[in-house]
Amino acid sequence: MSRAFDLWGVPFDGGATLGWPGARYAPDRVRRALSWMLMREEDGMVRAVDAGEDLPMPQIDDRGDVDVVPHELQATIDATSEAVAGSVRAGRVPLVVGGEDSLFFPSVRGFHDAVDGSVGVIHFDAHFDLLDESRRQGRYSHSSGMRRSLELERVSAEHCVQVGTRTFNFPSSAAFVEDVGLLQIPAVEVHEQGVERVAERMAERVAGADHVFWSFDIDVIDPAHAPGAGAHEPGGLTSRQALDFVRLLAPRCDGFGVMEVNPMMDFRDMTSTLAAYLIFSFAVHAA
Ligand SMILES: [Mn+2]
Image (cartoon, rainbow, N blue to C red; front, side):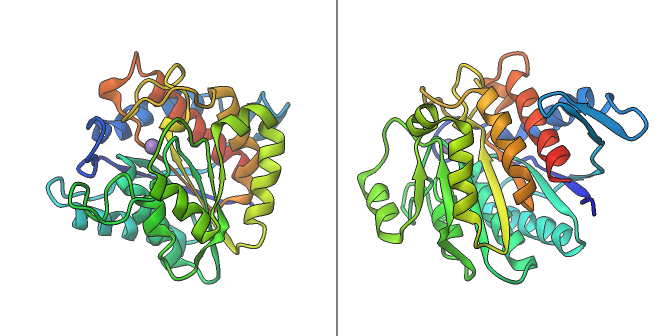
């Protein structure tokens, strides 16, 4: 049985309390880049060159943009959760294009609220996103998505994994990872162990979850491959590694969100283009 997909844009960057705003422009640019892949269809098939086979063209319905409220974070968060939940309840796989990473939590929440059973979260990010409420960033910023997701009733740390973390972060966030038993696979380990081994570890991690949502902050990719991000952390994944992860793990996932693509920091749309490839690859291999 093949699965169908709903594409949602969330043109909002009001939760970018650190780093650069501009992710509100991502949905339009990513949609434009997607057309390059969509035109490869022949008789309902597309050649998946990396996989070495012809595969069915995924059925992606562009649902347009979520009805964001640019000056109101909470209303935007709620609208995003509703959009995602609506797609999941309709039996469709949501593909979310942020927006900055404050849309990570409402995406997971909408997904969680629309399913029964346990929910696993795959979180690709240079950062931990484990901040608790603070005066500077509030409760629902682009730095707290994983923390808030772990508070959802049927999300447990044992089914969650963070991949691609690197450079420097808060000691208190690292202590939180230990306390709750979250698995973190830093970028260093991805480079040391290779994509296939890490993908196996991830699959084991989410094996016990009834449903899996994958949130992909584009800054998990090295700035050399993805300059159009909300912040630059050197030493990240390559675009090749990212596409390989998506090809290997998409079949195990039931929702996908790409966050933090920032066209204002981008170079000739190369990051929006990569985001479109990640989304399209996810749909091809998750279908
Ligand atoms: Mn990040």
